[in-house]
Image 1 (cartoon, rainbow, N blue to C red):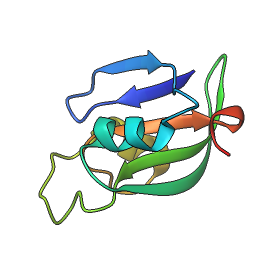
Image 2: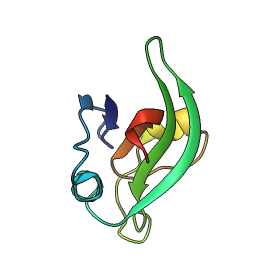
Image 3: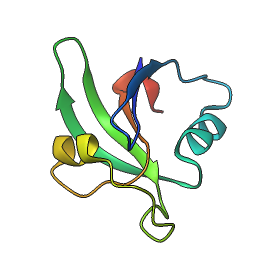
Length: 88
């Protein structure tokens, strides 16, 4: 299960559709995607990629404080954390 973290701090688990994963991710982050390698471990999941809006800073998206803290770098807008089997 992918983990969406919105700039507001709300989170949700989502299933990434295999057939149109790029479209799904672009809609979720509201634009072109940028993939950030990461290694984030929770109690039940290990996330190895974070997907964000490639132009988020240019578009002046709201800061995502939760994702920024997890990645130890500034993140804006919605972030999608993906497990290994969700990225090919």
